Length: 162
Length: 256
Image (cartoon, rainbow over all chains, first blue to last red; front, top):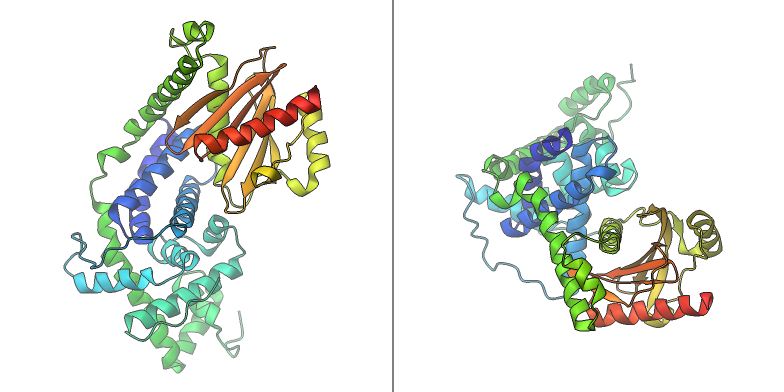
């Protein structure tokens, strides 16, 4: 297996984690990861060095954005009850954080997860989203304030654009 | 060394938690947090939030990777897709009632024409998802775009006007084609639906229009007086045919 394929393969667990938190549905999340991998492997010849990790996160983030855009045009079906079978011992807490994530706008959720869950730098996230670092920082601050309020049971502040 | 008297900003608190703060400022922030319990409480809540995220989602990374995500399996996948596309092409051909091309296709060695279409579909899939840099030259700079591509590709490259089909030119780029440079135009509808036109020199062939589809993507392709065209989109066959017909008619007028 080529070095490129090995470095893509090594990223699969982290991509699955990110996708699950981003999309919240296990099947949709793995579909996103699969599409990301197919696209990456098909573009192997076009990848001229650089950071495979950031590149894969970029593809996945964009695919999810496209997916949501196409969803926006038709009615969206959401599970009525969040009884995800893979919740661990701290189930209630896990449900709370998942629910809090669900109330974030797309760009803020991606920033929050890339920084807090995947451990990417502000610079990397700025490149992934194609925005200045200042925008990443303001999205992160808003996302944290929103999730904090949501976890504390306060009435969520109004959704903000950008 | 920074001045510990400078108030710590909200951004600095976040940067502190995320290890993005310059090392020389960390001590200032730590001193600030001791003096400002409200800020200390917020910093603490962000750390708890990170812990909750890891507690909830790290287990996903620890799961065994599902079979359908195995690299070996995915690497084999495009091959199947190639044959699928050829089968679709053959079907379209049989429906069209030709003979010569079928004989070539039946040997199962993909013709240059089929590879050409696959290159175009690959380019289509790669660039339509691109948000920041879908094209090299924007459609607003049409004159320059056409002159540049004409010079590089070696025939009279013209971006068709597809407003009647509800499409606006996003722009274009130069791509490597099977026998030299290829021109690539992207169009967008009001609802964000994207179509692309890929064209390159073909060896003097003129063919009828053919159709290939896989998953959500489909392509219509033909060659006319030495130039081959592939119109790709994710739409239905009827819509794609309407657009391809408009492209064909305009190229006919310009060259004819």
